[in-house]
Image (cartoon, rainbow, N blue to C red; front, side):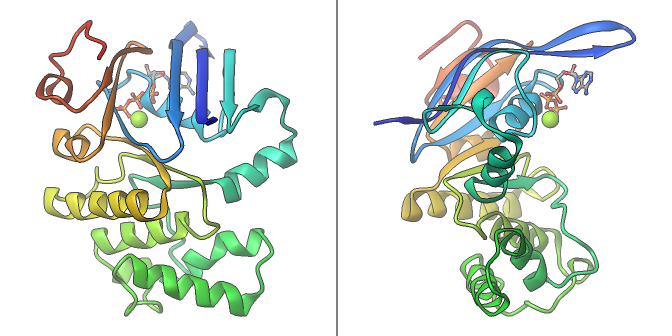
Length: 242
Ligand SMILES: Nc1ncnc2c1ncn2[C@@H]1O[C@H](COP(=O)(O)OP(=O)(O)OP(=O)(O)O)[C@@H](O)[C@H]1O
Ligand SMILES: [Mg+2]
């Protein structure tokens, strides 16, 4: 079986006036198809940097990143764009919905880029809205929806092109705990019922508890990778690797 994601000694350096900053310092990580993984770690530890590389929004300074067996450094811009639009679904903390579009049109948008006919994409968008529990609100604009409902629209949009991988960077960060856990339950059911591989960045131990595997990052390095034990969830797992 091929790993869906395989990072081998990935380094990411950022350049600024202050010099070079090493945000990822030799990250090696394998995620198999069908896993549900959370990434935790202090602010500034490199979580979003890691997600940007996994999502092919950015490239490593050194090291190898393979997606589904292919070294992403060998992919053309066109192939990378296709992967980002159809292979990977993204969910962000601030939802990133287009304010002037209805919920339905927001969900349908990625299918415009992948060339799905209007009738088909509207039908699929409606099905997706129903599957995340807001099938009764296709015409609402984002401003007319609650935070939890907006995040549901964003989750539905991320699924538009049936991605193999769902990446979520603090998807519950702007939600109260109860709504956050509902959104997490949505990810869990997608993972369990449709086999979508899910990687979630979270600072919330209760969100990470609902995943099968916790990867803890500190100073750009993985220092815990294993089950969601209390020590792993609450950050007392220093030096431990399960
Ligand atoms: N474009 C950039 N240029 C320079 N430094 C950057 C850039 N992006 C991030 N960094 C630095 O890299 C480090 C890791 O940033 P990153 O955004 O990955 O952290 P994070 O773990 O996601 O933090 P948070 O929990 O606050 O979102 C930080 O010290 C940050 O200041
Ligand atoms: Mg971040």
